[in-house]
Amino acid sequence: MAAIRTDDLTRRFGDVVAVDGLDLTVEEGEVFGFLGPNGAGKSTTINVLLGFIEPSSGGAEVLGADVTTHSRAVRERIGLLPEGYGLYENLTGREHLVSAIETKAADDDPDELLDRVGLEPEDARRAAGGYSKGMQQRLGLAIALVGEPDLLVLDEPSSGLDPKGIKLLRDIVREEADRGATVFFSSHILDQVEKVCDRVGIMAQGELVALDTLDELRAEMGVGGVVEATVDTVPDLGPVRAVDGVRDVTATEDVVTVTCGDPAAKMPALRRIDAAATVEDIGIETTSLESLFEEYTNGEHEAVAAQEDRVAATPGGED
Amino acid sequence: MRLATIARDDFTNARRSSIVLAVIGVFTLLVAMVFASEYGIYDEPYRTLFDVSAFVSFVFPLFLAPLAYLSIAGDRMDGTIKYVMGLPNSRAEYFFGKFASRLSVATAAVVLGMVVSFVIALATYVQAPSVERFAVFTGVSLVYTVSFVSIFVAISAAASSRSRAMFGALGAYFVFVVFWFGFFPVINLGTILDTVESLLGVTVSENTRSYVQLLSPATAYLQSTEPVYSGVFDQYQSFQLNFQPESDKLHDQTWFAVLVMLAWSAVSLAVGYLSFRRSELG
Image (cartoon, rainbow over all chains, first blue to last red; front, side):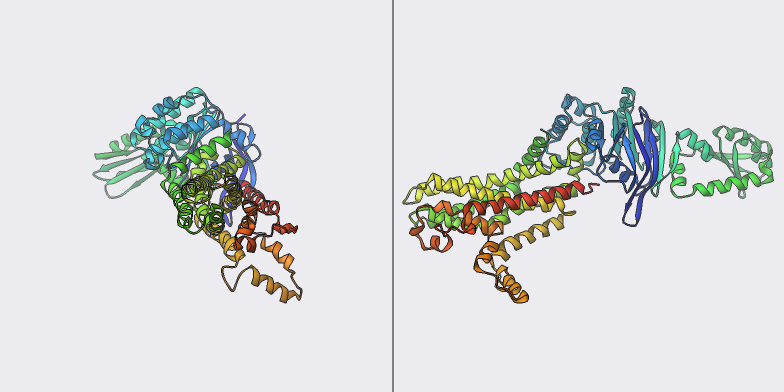
Protein backbone atom coordinates (compact mmCIF):
# COMPACT_ATOMS: atom_id res chain seq x y z
CA MET A 1 0.00 0.00 0.00
CA ALA A 2 1.30 3.42 -0.95
CA ALA A 3 1.41 6.23 1.59
CA ILE A 4 0.02 8.62 -0.99
CA ARG A 5 -1.43 7.84 -4.37
CA THR A 6 -3.10 10.35 -6.64
CA ASP A 7 -4.87 9.27 -9.76
CA ASP A 8 -5.22 11.82 -12.56
CA LEU A 9 -5.91 14.40 -9.86
CA THR A 10 -7.16 17.66 -11.27
CA ARG A 11 -8.32 20.77 -9.49
CA ARG A 12 -9.58 23.91 -11.19
CA PHE A 13 -10.36 27.28 -9.65
CA GLY A 14 -12.58 28.94 -12.21
CA ASP A 15 -10.47 29.05 -15.38
CA VAL A 16 -7.23 28.34 -13.57
CA VAL A 17 -6.05 24.75 -13.48
CA ALA A 18 -4.14 24.58 -10.21
CA VAL A 19 -3.39 20.85 -10.42
CA ASP A 20 -3.53 19.19 -13.80
CA GLY A 21 -3.84 15.40 -14.04
CA LEU A 22 -1.39 14.59 -11.27
CA ASP A 23 -0.34 10.93 -10.98
CA LEU A 24 1.90 10.59 -7.97
CA THR A 25 2.77 7.65 -5.77
CA VAL A 26 4.73 8.04 -2.56
CA GLU A 27 5.81 4.72 -1.11
CA GLU A 28 5.59 3.91 2.56
CA GLY A 29 8.71 4.75 4.49
CA GLU A 30 10.23 7.16 2.01
CA VAL A 31 11.10 10.80 2.48
CA PHE A 32 9.58 12.62 -0.42
CA GLY A 33 10.31 16.21 -1.33
CA PHE A 34 7.49 17.94 -3.15
CA LEU A 35 9.07 20.89 -4.88
CA GLY A 36 7.96 23.77 -6.97
CA PRO A 37 7.71 27.54 -6.96
CA ASN A 38 4.81 29.31 -5.30
CA GLY A 39 1.63 28.75 -7.24
CA ALA A 40 2.80 25.47 -8.77
CA GLY A 41 -0.06 23.54 -7.18
CA LYS A 42 1.70 22.03 -4.17
CA SER A 43 -0.62 23.41 -1.50
CA THR A 44 -3.69 22.68 -3.60
CA THR A 45 -2.57 19.05 -3.82
CA ILE A 46 -1.97 18.90 -0.07
CA ASN A 47 -5.36 20.51 0.62
CA VAL A 48 -7.02 17.80 -1.45
CA LEU A 49 -5.13 15.11 0.49
CA LEU A 50 -6.44 16.60 3.74
CA GLY A 51 -10.04 16.82 2.53
CA PHE A 52 -9.97 20.63 2.81
CA ILE A 53 -10.96 20.92 -0.83
CA GLU A 54 -12.44 18.50 -3.33
CA PRO A 55 -10.80 17.47 -6.58
CA SER A 56 -12.47 18.63 -9.80
CA SER A 57 -11.73 15.21 -11.23
CA GLY A 58 -9.56 12.23 -10.44
CA GLY A 59 -8.92 11.12 -6.89
CA ALA A 60 -6.42 10.46 -4.18
CA GLU A 61 -5.74 7.94 -1.45
CA VAL A 62 -3.70 8.39 1.67
CA LEU A 63 -2.58 5.22 3.47
CA GLY A 64 -5.20 3.34 1.50
CA ALA A 65 -8.13 5.58 2.46
CA ASP A 66 -10.01 7.71 -0.04
CA VAL A 67 -9.39 11.36 0.89
CA THR A 68 -12.82 12.63 -0.11
CA THR A 69 -14.91 9.98 1.62
CA HIS A 70 -12.64 9.10 4.56
CA SER A 71 -11.04 12.40 5.41
CA ARG A 72 -11.19 11.88 9.16
CA ALA A 73 -9.63 8.42 8.93
CA VAL A 74 -6.84 9.98 6.90
CA ARG A 75 -6.30 12.78 9.40
CA GLU A 76 -6.24 10.28 12.28
CA ARG A 77 -3.14 8.68 10.86
CA ILE A 78 -1.20 11.64 9.56
CA GLY A 79 0.71 14.41 11.27
CA LEU A 80 0.22 17.75 9.61
CA LEU A 81 2.11 21.01 9.59
CA PRO A 82 -0.05 23.17 7.34
CA GLU A 83 1.23 26.20 5.51
CA GLY A 84 -0.01 29.54 6.80
CA TYR A 85 -1.90 28.05 9.70
CA GLY A 86 -3.07 30.15 12.63
CA LEU A 87 -3.34 29.68 16.36
CA TYR A 88 -5.83 30.79 19.00
CA GLU A 89 -4.16 33.98 20.11
CA ASN A 90 -5.10 33.68 23.77
CA LEU A 91 -4.21 30.01 24.18
CA THR A 92 -0.68 28.98 25.02
CA GLY A 93 1.38 26.85 22.70
CA ARG A 94 1.22 24.04 25.21
CA GLU A 95 -2.59 24.22 25.34
CA HIS A 96 -2.74 23.83 21.57
CA LEU A 97 -0.50 20.80 21.81
CA VAL A 98 -2.53 19.25 24.64
CA SER A 99 -5.72 19.65 22.59
CA ALA A 100 -4.04 17.98 19.62
CA ILE A 101 -3.02 15.05 21.84
CA GLU A 102 -6.60 14.81 23.17
CA THR A 103 -8.11 15.00 19.70
CA LYS A 104 -5.86 12.25 18.42
CA ALA A 105 -6.43 10.18 21.56
CA ALA A 106 -2.65 9.87 21.82
CA ASP A 107 -0.61 9.44 24.97
CA ASP A 108 2.31 11.73 24.18
CA ASP A 109 3.91 13.83 26.89
CA PRO A 110 3.45 17.42 25.68
CA ASP A 111 6.62 18.61 27.41
CA GLU A 112 8.68 15.93 25.72
CA LEU A 113 7.37 16.98 22.31
CA LEU A 114 8.01 20.66 23.05
CA ASP A 115 11.54 19.79 24.08
CA ARG A 116 12.02 17.78 20.92
CA VAL A 117 11.13 20.72 18.67
CA GLY A 118 13.13 23.15 20.77
CA LEU A 119 10.30 25.31 22.07
CA GLU A 120 11.38 26.75 25.43
CA PRO A 121 9.09 25.87 28.35
CA GLU A 122 8.47 29.55 29.14
CA ASP A 123 7.53 30.23 25.51
CA ALA A 124 5.25 27.20 25.47
CA ARG A 125 3.32 28.71 28.38
CA ARG A 126 2.86 32.08 26.75
CA ALA A 127 -0.14 33.06 24.63
CA ALA A 128 0.42 32.01 21.02
CA GLY A 129 -0.71 35.45 19.80
CA GLY A 130 2.78 36.73 20.59
CA TYR A 131 4.69 33.97 18.82
CA SER A 132 7.26 34.62 16.14
CA LYS A 133 6.93 32.70 12.89
CA GLY A 134 9.76 30.42 13.97
CA MET A 135 8.12 29.60 17.31
CA GLN A 136 4.84 28.93 15.55
CA GLN A 137 6.55 26.56 13.11
CA ARG A 138 8.21 24.70 15.97
CA LEU A 139 4.87 24.34 17.73
CA GLY A 140 3.29 23.20 14.46
CA LEU A 141 5.98 20.58 14.12
CA ALA A 142 5.28 19.33 17.66
CA ILE A 143 1.56 19.11 16.82
CA ALA A 144 2.42 17.17 13.65
CA LEU A 145 4.45 14.66 15.66
CA VAL A 146 1.56 13.85 18.02
CA GLY A 147 0.56 10.19 18.05
CA GLU A 148 3.50 8.82 16.04
CA PRO A 149 1.76 9.33 12.69
CA ASP A 150 2.33 6.90 9.83
CA LEU A 151 2.68 9.84 7.46
CA LEU A 152 3.99 13.32 8.13
CA VAL A 153 2.73 16.01 5.78
CA LEU A 154 4.82 19.12 6.17
CA ASP A 155 3.83 22.06 3.99
CA GLU A 156 6.72 24.52 3.69
CA PRO A 157 8.03 23.45 7.10
CA SER A 158 11.20 25.50 6.95
CA SER A 159 9.51 28.86 6.42
CA GLY A 160 10.33 31.19 9.29
CA LEU A 161 12.92 28.85 10.77
CA ASP A 162 16.46 30.02 11.44
CA PRO A 163 19.40 27.80 10.39
CA LYS A 164 19.34 26.09 13.78
CA GLY A 165 15.66 25.39 13.37
CA ILE A 166 16.21 24.06 9.88
CA LYS A 167 18.85 21.67 11.11
CA LEU A 168 16.48 20.52 13.85
CA LEU A 169 13.75 20.00 11.27
CA ARG A 170 16.12 17.89 9.18
CA ASP A 171 17.07 15.80 12.20
CA ILE A 172 13.45 15.24 13.08
CA VAL A 173 12.62 14.21 9.52
CA ARG A 174 15.45 11.66 9.65
CA GLU A 175 14.36 10.37 13.07
CA GLU A 176 10.79 9.98 11.88
CA ALA A 177 11.91 8.18 8.73
CA ASP A 178 14.06 5.85 10.85
CA ARG A 179 11.00 5.09 12.94
CA GLY A 180 9.34 3.94 9.72
CA ALA A 181 7.15 6.95 9.02
CA THR A 182 6.67 8.32 5.55
CA VAL A 183 7.55 11.99 5.25
CA PHE A 184 6.01 14.11 2.55
CA PHE A 185 7.09 17.68 2.55
CA SER A 186 6.72 20.55 0.20
CA SER A 187 9.17 23.34 -0.28
CA HIS A 188 10.18 26.05 -2.65
CA ILE A 189 13.53 26.32 -0.91
CA LEU A 190 15.77 23.51 -2.00
CA ASP A 191 18.84 23.52 0.15
CA GLN A 192 17.18 21.53 2.87
CA VAL A 193 15.52 19.09 0.56
CA GLU A 194 18.76 18.03 -1.00
CA LYS A 195 19.98 16.56 2.25
CA VAL A 196 17.01 14.56 3.45
CA CYS A 197 14.95 13.39 0.49
CA ASP A 198 14.96 9.91 -0.96
CA ARG A 199 13.01 11.15 -3.91
CA VAL A 200 11.70 14.44 -5.21
CA GLY A 201 8.85 15.48 -7.42
CA ILE A 202 8.94 18.87 -9.05
CA MET A 203 5.69 20.67 -9.76
CA ALA A 204 5.36 23.50 -12.25
CA GLN A 205 2.08 25.03 -13.35
CA GLY A 206 0.04 22.23 -11.89
CA GLU A 207 1.99 19.41 -13.47
CA LEU A 208 4.63 17.06 -12.23
CA VAL A 209 7.59 17.90 -14.45
CA ALA A 210 10.12 15.65 -12.77
CA LEU A 211 10.02 12.68 -10.44
CA ASP A 212 13.11 10.79 -9.36
CA THR A 213 15.97 10.61 -6.91
CA LEU A 214 18.14 13.70 -6.92
CA ASP A 215 21.14 11.84 -8.35
CA GLU A 216 19.07 10.46 -11.17
CA LEU A 217 17.60 13.86 -11.88
CA ARG A 218 21.04 15.40 -12.02
CA ALA A 219 22.26 12.71 -14.41
CA GLU A 220 19.14 12.96 -16.52
CA MET A 221 19.52 16.70 -16.72
CA GLY A 222 23.19 16.29 -17.48
CA VAL A 223 24.27 18.70 -14.86
CA GLY A 224 27.47 17.29 -13.49
CA GLY A 225 29.02 20.68 -13.06
CA VAL A 226 30.65 23.46 -15.02
CA VAL A 227 34.41 24.00 -15.40
CA GLU A 228 35.69 27.39 -16.39
CA ALA A 229 39.35 27.52 -17.45
CA THR A 230 41.13 30.80 -18.14
CA VAL A 231 43.74 30.13 -20.82
CA ASP A 232 46.40 32.12 -22.68
CA THR A 233 44.97 31.09 -26.05
CA VAL A 234 41.87 29.08 -26.78
CA PRO A 235 42.89 25.65 -28.11
CA ASP A 236 41.00 23.38 -30.50
CA LEU A 237 37.94 22.36 -28.52
CA GLY A 238 37.37 19.09 -30.39
CA PRO A 239 39.30 16.85 -28.01
CA VAL A 240 37.58 18.44 -25.02
CA ARG A 241 34.19 17.84 -26.53
CA ALA A 242 35.16 14.25 -27.12
CA VAL A 243 35.55 13.50 -23.42
CA ASP A 244 32.91 11.09 -22.18
CA GLY A 245 30.32 12.90 -20.12
CA VAL A 246 31.02 16.39 -21.47
CA ARG A 247 27.87 18.01 -22.62
CA ASP A 248 28.88 21.32 -24.07
CA VAL A 249 32.04 23.37 -24.58
CA THR A 250 32.06 27.05 -25.36
CA ALA A 251 34.82 29.61 -25.44
CA THR A 252 35.20 33.34 -25.25
CA GLU A 253 38.49 35.20 -25.82
CA ASP A 254 40.34 33.48 -23.01
CA VAL A 255 37.81 31.41 -21.10
CA VAL A 256 36.77 27.88 -21.97
CA THR A 257 33.55 26.79 -20.37
CA VAL A 258 32.88 23.06 -20.14
CA THR A 259 29.45 21.85 -19.07
CA CYS A 260 29.53 18.28 -17.84
CA GLY A 261 26.76 15.74 -17.75
CA ASP A 262 28.75 13.59 -15.37
CA PRO A 263 30.69 15.04 -12.45
CA ALA A 264 33.58 12.67 -13.26
CA ALA A 265 34.07 14.28 -16.69
CA LYS A 266 35.40 17.52 -15.23
CA MET A 267 38.96 16.34 -14.59
CA PRO A 268 39.62 14.59 -17.94
CA ALA A 269 38.23 17.64 -19.75
CA LEU A 270 40.53 19.88 -17.77
CA ARG A 271 43.51 17.67 -18.55
CA ARG A 272 42.83 17.96 -22.28
CA ILE A 273 42.64 21.75 -22.04
CA ASP A 274 45.83 21.73 -20.00
CA ALA A 275 47.55 19.61 -22.66
CA ALA A 276 46.72 22.09 -25.40
CA ALA A 277 47.03 25.42 -23.65
CA THR A 278 48.39 27.12 -20.58
CA VAL A 279 45.71 27.22 -17.93
CA GLU A 280 46.01 30.39 -15.87
CA ASP A 281 43.06 29.86 -13.58
CA ILE A 282 40.17 27.49 -13.11
CA GLY A 283 36.77 27.75 -11.54
CA ILE A 284 34.47 24.82 -10.84
CA GLU A 285 30.80 25.17 -10.22
CA THR A 286 28.80 22.22 -9.03
CA THR A 287 25.28 22.55 -10.25
CA SER A 288 23.05 22.98 -7.29
CA LEU A 289 19.61 21.63 -7.04
CA GLU A 290 18.63 25.27 -7.24
CA SER A 291 19.62 25.62 -10.89
CA LEU A 292 18.22 22.21 -11.68
CA PHE A 293 14.99 23.29 -10.15
CA GLU A 294 14.99 26.57 -12.01
CA GLU A 295 15.53 24.82 -15.28
CA TYR A 296 12.53 22.63 -14.69
CA THR A 297 10.21 25.24 -13.36
CA ASN A 298 11.05 27.92 -15.91
CA GLY A 299 10.22 25.53 -18.68
CA GLU A 300 13.89 25.47 -19.69
CA HIS A 301 13.94 21.73 -19.57
CA GLU A 302 12.82 21.59 -23.19
CA ALA A 303 15.59 24.03 -24.06
CA VAL A 304 18.10 21.72 -22.44
CA ALA A 305 16.78 18.80 -24.43
CA ALA A 306 17.02 20.79 -27.65
CA GLN A 307 20.57 21.73 -26.80
CA GLU A 308 21.34 18.06 -26.29
CA ASP A 309 20.21 17.34 -29.83
CA ARG A 310 22.37 20.10 -31.19
CA VAL A 311 25.41 18.82 -29.30
CA ALA A 312 24.83 15.35 -30.64
CA ALA A 313 24.71 16.73 -34.17
CA THR A 314 27.98 18.60 -33.81
CA PRO A 315 30.79 16.61 -35.43
CA GLY A 316 33.05 17.38 -32.48
CA GLY A 317 30.51 15.70 -30.25
CA GLU A 318 31.26 12.31 -31.77
CA ASP A 319 34.23 10.43 -30.58
CA MET B 1 -15.34 14.52 23.06
CA ARG B 2 -13.65 16.19 20.12
CA LEU B 3 -16.50 18.68 19.95
CA ALA B 4 -15.93 19.46 23.62
CA THR B 5 -12.24 20.07 23.01
CA ILE B 6 -13.02 22.48 20.19
CA ALA B 7 -15.65 24.29 22.27
CA ARG B 8 -13.35 24.46 25.29
CA ASP B 9 -10.45 25.92 23.32
CA ASP B 10 -12.64 28.49 21.61
CA PHE B 11 -14.29 29.42 24.91
CA THR B 12 -10.97 29.73 26.73
CA ASN B 13 -9.69 31.91 23.91
CA ALA B 14 -12.76 34.14 24.23
CA ARG B 15 -12.63 34.22 28.04
CA ARG B 16 -9.12 35.65 27.86
CA SER B 17 -10.02 38.24 25.25
CA SER B 18 -10.38 41.78 26.53
CA ILE B 19 -12.82 42.60 23.74
CA VAL B 20 -15.14 39.77 24.73
CA LEU B 21 -14.96 40.77 28.39
CA ALA B 22 -15.67 44.38 27.42
CA VAL B 23 -18.75 43.39 25.41
CA ILE B 24 -20.13 41.36 28.31
CA GLY B 25 -19.21 44.10 30.77
CA VAL B 26 -20.86 46.91 28.82
CA PHE B 27 -24.05 44.88 28.33
CA THR B 28 -24.22 44.10 32.05
CA LEU B 29 -23.56 47.74 32.88
CA LEU B 30 -26.32 49.00 30.57
CA VAL B 31 -28.92 46.57 31.96
CA ALA B 32 -27.86 47.47 35.49
CA MET B 33 -28.22 51.15 34.63
CA VAL B 34 -31.79 50.65 33.45
CA PHE B 35 -32.58 49.16 36.86
CA ALA B 36 -30.64 51.79 38.77
CA SER B 37 -32.26 54.65 36.89
CA GLU B 38 -35.84 53.44 37.41
CA TYR B 39 -35.92 52.53 41.07
CA GLY B 40 -37.27 56.00 41.87
CA ILE B 41 -39.94 55.76 39.16
CA TYR B 42 -41.44 52.33 39.70
CA ASP B 43 -41.94 50.38 42.89
CA GLU B 44 -42.01 47.00 41.16
CA PRO B 45 -38.88 45.58 39.50
CA TYR B 46 -41.05 43.70 36.96
CA ARG B 47 -42.01 47.04 35.38
CA THR B 48 -38.33 47.69 34.79
CA LEU B 49 -37.96 44.20 33.29
CA PHE B 50 -40.44 45.39 30.67
CA ASP B 51 -38.08 48.22 29.70
CA VAL B 52 -35.13 45.86 29.79
CA SER B 53 -37.00 43.51 27.43
CA ALA B 54 -37.27 46.32 24.89
CA PHE B 55 -33.56 47.05 25.29
CA VAL B 56 -32.65 43.37 24.90
CA SER B 57 -34.91 42.95 21.91
CA PHE B 58 -33.58 46.00 20.01
CA VAL B 59 -29.97 46.20 21.12
CA PHE B 60 -28.76 42.84 22.41
CA PRO B 61 -28.24 41.41 18.88
CA LEU B 62 -25.69 44.19 18.39
CA PHE B 63 -23.77 42.81 21.37
CA LEU B 64 -24.11 39.23 20.13
CA ALA B 65 -22.85 40.10 16.65
CA PRO B 66 -19.23 40.81 17.67
CA LEU B 67 -19.27 37.71 19.88
CA ALA B 68 -20.30 35.42 17.05
CA TYR B 69 -19.90 36.77 13.53
CA LEU B 70 -16.20 35.89 13.25
CA SER B 71 -16.54 32.52 14.97
CA ILE B 72 -15.78 30.62 11.76
CA ALA B 73 -14.99 33.33 9.18
CA GLY B 74 -12.25 34.65 11.48
CA ASP B 75 -10.68 31.20 11.79
CA ARG B 76 -10.65 30.93 8.02
CA MET B 77 -8.98 34.29 7.64
CA ASP B 78 -6.18 33.72 10.14
CA GLY B 79 -5.72 30.02 9.38
CA THR B 80 -6.75 28.72 12.81
CA ILE B 81 -9.21 26.49 10.99
CA LYS B 82 -6.23 24.64 9.47
CA TYR B 83 -4.96 23.84 12.94
CA VAL B 84 -8.34 22.52 14.05
CA MET B 85 -9.34 20.75 10.84
CA GLY B 86 -5.85 19.34 10.28
CA LEU B 87 -6.56 17.28 13.38
CA PRO B 88 -9.08 14.43 13.03
CA ASN B 89 -12.11 16.64 13.69
CA SER B 90 -15.22 16.46 11.54
CA ARG B 91 -16.84 19.51 10.02
CA ALA B 92 -19.87 18.93 12.27
CA GLU B 93 -17.72 18.82 15.40
CA TYR B 94 -16.02 22.05 14.39
CA PHE B 95 -19.24 23.88 13.46
CA PHE B 96 -21.22 22.84 16.52
CA GLY B 97 -18.21 23.20 18.80
CA LYS B 98 -17.89 26.82 17.71
CA PHE B 99 -21.62 27.34 18.19
CA ALA B 100 -21.52 25.83 21.68
CA SER B 101 -18.61 28.04 22.67
CA ARG B 102 -20.12 31.29 21.39
CA LEU B 103 -23.49 30.43 22.91
CA SER B 104 -21.78 29.88 26.25
CA VAL B 105 -20.15 33.31 26.07
CA ALA B 106 -23.48 34.93 25.19
CA THR B 107 -25.23 33.00 27.95
CA ALA B 108 -22.67 34.32 30.41
CA ALA B 109 -23.56 37.88 29.35
CA VAL B 110 -27.31 37.31 29.86
CA VAL B 111 -26.93 35.52 33.18
CA LEU B 112 -24.45 38.06 34.53
CA GLY B 113 -26.72 40.96 33.47
CA MET B 114 -29.74 39.40 35.18
CA VAL B 115 -27.91 38.49 38.38
CA VAL B 116 -26.54 42.02 38.74
CA SER B 117 -29.98 43.46 37.98
CA PHE B 118 -31.61 41.21 40.55
CA VAL B 119 -29.16 42.34 43.22
CA ILE B 120 -29.74 46.01 42.35
CA ALA B 121 -33.51 45.48 42.41
CA LEU B 122 -33.27 43.71 45.74
CA ALA B 123 -31.28 46.54 47.22
CA THR B 124 -33.20 49.53 45.89
CA TYR B 125 -36.80 48.77 44.84
CA VAL B 126 -39.76 49.19 47.14
CA GLN B 127 -41.07 45.78 46.21
CA ALA B 128 -38.64 42.87 46.34
CA PRO B 129 -37.92 41.30 42.95
CA SER B 130 -39.60 37.99 42.24
CA VAL B 131 -37.21 35.13 41.60
CA GLU B 132 -39.83 33.47 39.37
CA ARG B 133 -40.30 36.53 37.16
CA PHE B 134 -36.53 37.01 36.83
CA ALA B 135 -36.07 33.33 36.05
CA VAL B 136 -38.74 33.33 33.35
CA PHE B 137 -37.31 36.52 31.92
CA THR B 138 -33.79 35.05 31.86
CA GLY B 139 -35.14 31.87 30.27
CA VAL B 140 -36.89 33.52 27.33
CA SER B 141 -33.96 35.93 26.90
CA LEU B 142 -31.70 32.90 26.56
CA VAL B 143 -33.96 31.45 23.87
CA TYR B 144 -33.67 34.79 22.06
CA THR B 145 -29.90 34.55 22.50
CA VAL B 146 -29.88 31.05 21.00
CA SER B 147 -31.74 32.30 17.93
CA PHE B 148 -29.38 35.18 17.19
CA VAL B 149 -26.17 33.30 18.01
CA SER B 150 -27.36 30.57 15.61
CA ILE B 151 -28.02 33.14 12.90
CA PHE B 152 -24.64 34.84 13.33
CA VAL B 153 -22.62 31.60 13.54
CA ALA B 154 -24.44 30.32 10.44
CA ILE B 155 -23.60 33.53 8.57
CA SER B 156 -20.00 33.17 9.73
CA ALA B 157 -19.88 29.59 8.46
CA ALA B 158 -21.29 30.53 5.08
CA ALA B 159 -19.19 33.67 4.62
CA SER B 160 -15.94 33.36 2.72
CA SER B 161 -14.41 36.47 4.23
CA ARG B 162 -14.41 38.70 7.29
CA SER B 163 -16.19 41.55 5.52
CA ARG B 164 -18.91 39.29 4.14
CA ALA B 165 -19.53 37.92 7.60
CA MET B 166 -19.80 41.47 8.94
CA PHE B 167 -22.22 42.62 6.26
CA GLY B 168 -24.22 39.45 6.73
CA ALA B 169 -24.50 40.01 10.47
CA LEU B 170 -25.48 43.66 10.04
CA GLY B 171 -27.96 42.67 7.35
CA ALA B 172 -29.57 40.13 9.65
CA TYR B 173 -29.88 42.76 12.37
CA PHE B 174 -31.48 45.27 10.03
CA VAL B 175 -33.97 42.79 8.65
CA PHE B 176 -34.99 41.10 11.90
CA VAL B 177 -34.94 44.14 14.16
CA VAL B 178 -34.97 47.50 12.33
CA PHE B 179 -37.14 46.42 9.43
CA TRP B 180 -39.47 44.10 11.33
CA PHE B 181 -40.19 46.55 14.14
CA GLY B 182 -40.62 49.36 11.61
CA PHE B 183 -37.99 51.77 12.94
CA PHE B 184 -37.73 53.27 9.47
CA PRO B 185 -40.97 55.02 8.56
CA VAL B 186 -40.76 54.36 4.81
CA ILE B 187 -39.40 50.86 4.46
CA ASN B 188 -40.57 48.36 7.02
CA LEU B 189 -42.66 45.26 7.32
CA GLY B 190 -45.92 47.29 7.35
CA THR B 191 -45.18 49.21 4.16
CA ILE B 192 -44.06 46.03 2.40
CA LEU B 193 -47.33 44.33 3.33
CA ASP B 194 -49.21 47.41 2.06
CA THR B 195 -47.33 47.13 -1.22
CA VAL B 196 -48.18 43.46 -1.49
CA GLU B 197 -51.84 44.35 -0.93
CA SER B 198 -51.93 46.94 -3.70
CA LEU B 199 -49.82 44.95 -6.16
CA LEU B 200 -51.82 41.75 -5.85
CA GLY B 201 -55.11 43.49 -5.20
CA VAL B 202 -55.68 41.47 -2.04
CA THR B 203 -56.35 42.41 1.51
CA VAL B 204 -53.95 41.22 4.16
CA SER B 205 -56.06 40.70 7.25
CA GLU B 206 -55.04 42.03 10.65
CA ASN B 207 -54.74 38.46 11.81
CA THR B 208 -52.31 37.59 9.01
CA ARG B 209 -50.35 40.74 9.75
CA SER B 210 -50.04 39.69 13.37
CA TYR B 211 -48.62 36.34 12.32
CA VAL B 212 -46.13 37.88 9.92
CA GLN B 213 -45.22 40.42 12.58
CA LEU B 214 -44.30 37.60 14.96
CA LEU B 215 -42.01 35.81 12.52
CA SER B 216 -38.85 37.71 13.48
CA PRO B 217 -36.97 36.39 16.51
CA ALA B 218 -36.95 39.94 17.88
CA THR B 219 -40.73 40.40 17.82
CA ALA B 220 -41.23 36.82 18.95
CA TYR B 221 -38.97 37.52 21.91
CA LEU B 222 -41.09 40.42 23.11
CA GLN B 223 -44.21 38.29 22.79
CA SER B 224 -42.53 35.47 24.70
CA THR B 225 -41.94 37.66 27.77
CA GLU B 226 -45.69 37.67 28.50
CA PRO B 227 -45.53 35.12 31.38
CA VAL B 228 -43.10 37.42 33.22
CA TYR B 229 -46.05 39.69 34.00
CA SER B 230 -48.63 37.02 34.80
CA GLY B 231 -51.14 38.28 37.31
CA VAL B 232 -50.07 41.92 37.04
CA PHE B 233 -51.24 42.93 33.55
CA ASP B 234 -53.73 45.35 35.06
CA GLN B 235 -51.00 47.23 36.91
CA TYR B 236 -49.55 49.05 33.93
CA GLN B 237 -51.04 50.30 30.72
CA SER B 238 -47.93 49.35 28.76
CA PHE B 239 -48.57 45.70 29.63
CA GLN B 240 -52.14 45.92 28.38
CA LEU B 241 -51.03 47.56 25.14
CA ASN B 242 -48.48 44.88 24.39
CA PHE B 243 -49.98 41.65 25.60
CA GLN B 244 -53.32 39.91 25.13
CA PRO B 245 -53.23 37.26 27.85
CA GLU B 246 -56.89 36.44 27.26
CA SER B 247 -56.44 35.87 23.52
CA ASP B 248 -56.57 32.34 22.18
CA LYS B 249 -54.96 33.38 18.88
CA LEU B 250 -51.81 31.42 18.06
CA HIS B 251 -49.76 34.58 17.58
CA ASP B 252 -50.54 35.65 21.12
CA GLN B 253 -49.26 32.43 22.67
CA THR B 254 -45.95 32.33 24.45
CA TRP B 255 -45.11 28.81 23.30
CA PHE B 256 -45.66 29.82 19.70
CA ALA B 257 -43.29 32.78 20.08
CA VAL B 258 -40.68 30.49 21.68
CA LEU B 259 -41.19 28.06 18.82
CA VAL B 260 -40.56 30.85 16.28
CA MET B 261 -37.23 31.68 17.96
CA LEU B 262 -36.18 28.01 18.14
CA ALA B 263 -37.22 27.52 14.52
CA TRP B 264 -34.91 30.37 13.49
CA SER B 265 -32.13 28.71 15.42
CA ALA B 266 -32.75 25.28 13.88
CA VAL B 267 -33.09 26.58 10.32
CA SER B 268 -29.99 28.79 10.63
CA LEU B 269 -27.87 26.01 12.09
CA ALA B 270 -29.01 23.57 9.42
CA VAL B 271 -28.33 25.99 6.57
CA GLY B 272 -25.03 27.12 8.12
CA TYR B 273 -23.81 23.59 8.70
CA LEU B 274 -24.78 22.35 5.24
CA SER B 275 -23.04 25.31 3.68
CA PHE B 276 -19.94 24.74 5.80
CA ARG B 277 -19.87 21.01 5.10
CA ARG B 278 -19.52 21.70 1.39
CA SER B 279 -17.19 24.66 1.69
CA GLU B 280 -13.52 24.75 0.78
CA LEU B 281 -11.04 25.34 3.56
CA GLY B 282 -7.86 25.74 1.56
